[in-house]
Image (cartoon, rainbow, N blue to C red):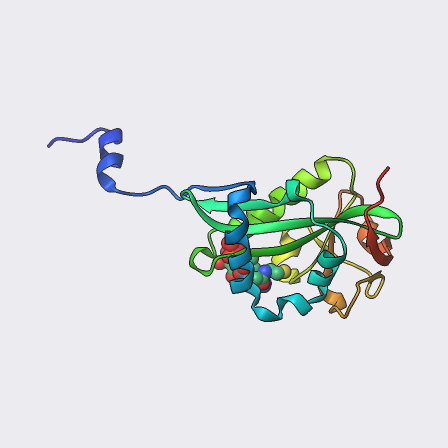
Length: 183
Ligand SMILES: CC(C)(COP(=O)(O)OP(=O)(O)OC[C@H]1O[C@@H](n2cnc3c(N)ncnc32)[C@H](O)[C@@H]1OP(=O)(O)O)[C@@H](O)C(=O)NCCC(=O)NCCS
């Protein structure tokens, strides 16, 4: 019996590796991100409270990221520098994965990676978001004190979640969302 070597076995198997990466956004991604957000959140997205924050405060394009599976764009995330009660941090979102590419880990990788990059800069102490506890808490986000962080519109307080390397900040942070305080 002839046993093929490993390299030729892989070449003949036609198995495409599921290569998932995240990278910073570039100018060519603009239309992809717009279309994806429209698909993921629909026409009502502009009235969502988290979108209203992003209308008031500019996103940081250096913290906008794209996910790709096998070289095809499949997800995106934005970050908005903000402050709450005089403490600088970031608002994460919108986070979206194209419906054809869900459940491959792109959403979680984007959330983790963009937050790690933002916090590593040492200029913001938390990453805030409005989202599902079941999705984000296993990644390290924690519930906040209900009503303590004030958004410019209605939010479900049980969905206001915070990630921070500082123990206790998720429960102590309070105040209205305001602009990022430059040095
Ligand atoms: C939420 C979203 C970003 C997840 O993207 P994704 O690339 O499929 O996420 P991942 O592959 O990293 O994780 C998928 C897992 O999370 C679970 N999951 C997805 N959305 C969830 C939610 N809202 N609550 C709890 N679990 C959720 C999936 O069931 C899946 O579970 P499994 O691994 O046990 O199969 C995507 O579904 C999406 O774009 N939804 C529409 C926009 C949206 O709601 N964005 C989030 C706003 S906070």
